[in-house]
Every structure is written in structure tokens, then in C-alpha cells.
Amino acid sequence: MSRKWSWLWIVVLAVSPWLAGCGTVPATGRSQFIMISRDQEVRLGAEARDEFVAGYGGEIQSAQIRNYVRDVGAKIVEATRLDPEPWDVPWEFIVLDSATVNAFAIPGGKVFITRGMLSRMNSEAQLAGILGHEAGHVTGRHSARIISNQYAIAGVVTMIGVFGELQDSDVLRGIGVGAQVGGTVFALSFSRSHELEADQLGLRYMTRAGYDPEGLIEVFEILKSLQGGAAGPEWLSTHPTTDRRIAETRALIQEQHPELINGQGLIVGRDRFQQNVLAPLRALPPPRHRP
Ligand SMILES: [Zn+2]
Image 1: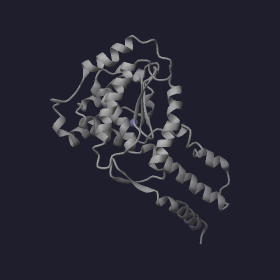
Image 2: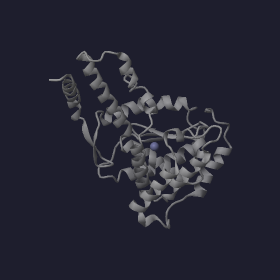
Image 3: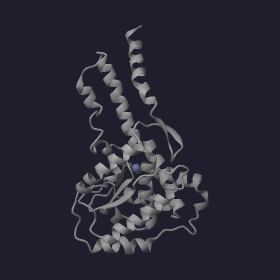
Image 4: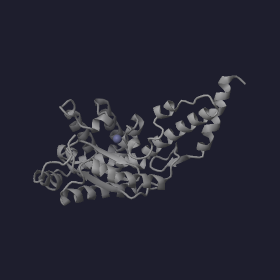
């Protein structure tokens, strides 16, 4: 057998144990390569949660804002429970006392939004859009998919190393092996397809909860308008918010929720957002965390 073909066999042998890791992602119904279990995801999320809270200035010091965001989050969670196989995780919606403009999710249902992001928004539908999008990363199991791919690459390279073809530990470090646990992996950007899927799931959840899907587009437009400032929104570093993304979101609404286009009877909630977020924000001391 030529050297080239023996390499191929090594790769096949190395990958085969993980074929058992293929599973269906309930939210999308698609079969995906996932090696970590729901319980592992929940453990990772629980471990990383406090690190993120501490790293972003702690939770916001307003019970009114915390409760309001938690309640909107609860409506999104209720909407995820209408999926044929709901993704049952210990959901939590946390407002960080940070001036940074960002929102993100880690495995196991932990969703974060910063005070900086809230201060730029002006309706409950916009908040529901962002929380829905982040919930979509959780139910789409996007972190688990990235972690699984990293394990798989690590496995393949280790096997090749064992067979004496590659022994340079720099190669392992170069692909990020050893960085899977402890938060580093969560800083990874999701791929474009993950983002599109999260937008799709986010629209599904926010509209099931009765919100005007236009809210998600409005948030994209707000964030886009902040681009190019002295400190642009951190969210944009992981979520390129271009005219293309906005057009794609609009197309998703037309395709999947045509009945909602005129917006009649849908929740926008500008007054509620004003009363429960923007007014209490003005009474708070400055954010404890700044970019
Ligand atoms: Zn995203």
C-alpha cells in the first residue's frame, strides 16, 4: 500500500469511533456529529457560568431589570418547549453589569446579555429577538458541535502521531487541543451556518411567544449603525451584521412566517421596555465593567 493510502486508513480508523457520536439535534431535526452528551453540556455551562459573570462586572444591580429579562427569557423557553423534542436544560437569562455591547450563550442554557446592549435597544420585541437567537445557539447545540469537531481533529492527529508520522506537539497546540474546557472554546465564533440557523430558531421562538419578528431586524440595524464607533459593539466581532444578514432575516420571515408580515396583533412592547429597562438604567451607578 502506498504511503498516501496508509494515511487514509489511519484517518478512517481514527474517525470511526466517533461515528457513534452522530446524533439528531432535536430543534432542527438534523443529524449532526456530536460527541458530548446533554449532561456534559450542562456541566460545562454550570462551570463556566460564574467565570463569565465575574469577567463582565457581575450581574446588574437592578432587580427590576433582572426580573424583566428573566420573564422575557421564560417566554422564549416556553416557546422552545413546543419543539417536537424540547431541549431540556437549566435555562438562565443573566444581565451583566458591563458597558460592552454583547449577548451570548454557553452550553446548558446559560444566556447572557450586557447592560450596554440593553441600553441600545428600545422594545421588548428586540430583546425577545436577541434572546431567541441566543436560545437558538443552545437548542441547535452549536457549542457542542464545535467541541465535537475539535475532539475529532485532535483524535485524528493523535492517531497519526502514534503511528510515527507526526510528532510535533505544536501541531496539536495549533489546532487548539487542550483548550476545549474552561471557557476558551466558548469564545470561538460560530460559523455562518450556525448564525443563520440561530436566526431561524430565534424567529421561531420569538414569534411563537407572540413577538413581532421585525424586532430582530431592528436590533441588527441598531448594531450595524454602531459599527465604526470608537469601541464598536463586541457582538459584531462574532456576528457580522451586514446588509446581507438583514436581507436573509427578512427572507426567512417571508418564507417561514408570511402570516406575520403586517405585524397586526404582535407584541412590540416599547412602553414596557421603557418602564422596566431604560428608566431603571438611568438610576444606576456606572457599569462595573468597561471594554
Ligand atoms: Zn449568534
